[in-house]
Image (cartoon, rainbow, N blue to C red):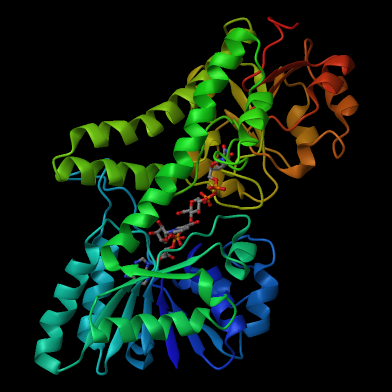
Length: 461
Ligand code: NAD
Ligand code: UGA
């Protein structure tokens, strides 16, 4: 059997590497229009940083895993084609700012329709609005009528989280496959299920109708993001009442109906998907005439923006209402630890907010490149408003404040020499912990003025 995956990004690369690793009898070919990315996948400097990924790629590359820019040939030879291209928020025309931009997906469907000379199973791996499979099927079928080629479209959304992608793929909570409810549809679902069954227990492979599968992906992300916005909303209330958000999260998380995961209050969620997928959901609800439902979900995104703005304001107010020409160390730029991905990172918004207030930023992140930081902040590389530092100590030197924006382990108290940091900073030494990862009491005793999310000393009991 031969698989072709269109799109060699954060999803296409890791998911296909895992399939190739687990199924040596299947040839997996990952194709992309971006030649530079393909070259990186062929090297040891992968375009995606993900713990365990390089080892997995190396095991299968050259055996049954290949990366190529020859998309037509990849499609032609494959029995199963995964569409793993990006589906960003539309920036133009109808639905701008909310709807998913499906141009890359449609382009894929048209390419598949044009070059296919044998029957194919086409798998939606990208996150798509509910009922997209219908459009894909129409494009494919319009061509198949001419050439006699038959297509089956399946929905197989990906639930991996960055930073833990390889663990998530190795041991997923579930694999979801949606297909057409017909004998041909069932057969296609079974073909895909049998691939995952190489390593995923059958009871974890859920099959549904295609619309349920598409909508379940948006729903999962909406519920996950909603939990973060809910605890972040509570963090604001904690700060003005003396409650401690981590204690509240711990207390409610012990209720087995709520569960303890995804209750970590922070400077706000980032990443390429939560905001995009919720806005897509909001757009769909509006489109289907459900404004109340749309408004309900939109609040999750509104609350996230509020949380980021609140963090900037807190820095500003504590630094005596001005950060103009003050040096602020930014520790962490990725949207979470263990990834080099910066898409929609809270750090971008916080940095932009501080730059608007004329602060000078010393930015350090262990995995994000200098070019990427300049690009995300929309600054020319000769800008003197920011300096990219090689380590957190360099960033903190002469700084008025340190702001922790990504929860990299190296910023934890047992891994950093905070005395050295303290001594190199301007007085008073402010530390704004946007991830609640430092030992507050320890750092306060050392002499730092520590501000954490959802915690306040003002009401200390
Ligand atoms: P990405 O931007 O990292 O990768 C997409 C790739 O598709 C890019 O390399 C791009 O060059 C390529 N591409 C676009 N059009 C193409 C075409 N016509 N032919 C060949 N290649 C083409 O995106 P991603 O983060 O991998 O996300 C892909 C999809 O998976 C999105 O729909 C996203 O919502 C979903 N998803 C992402 C994650 C995640 O953690 N990043 C998790 C689950 C689902
Ligand atoms: C998320 C989902 O967890 C995946 O299941 C999904 O497949 C993926 O989106 C997607 O569709 O793209 P991801 O964005 O990679 O994965 O990472 P998360 O661990 O969900 O973190 C998202 C953001 O929320 C990060 O900025 C993280 O720091 C923040 N977060 C997470 C919190 O602030 N608090 C928490 O308790 C958890």
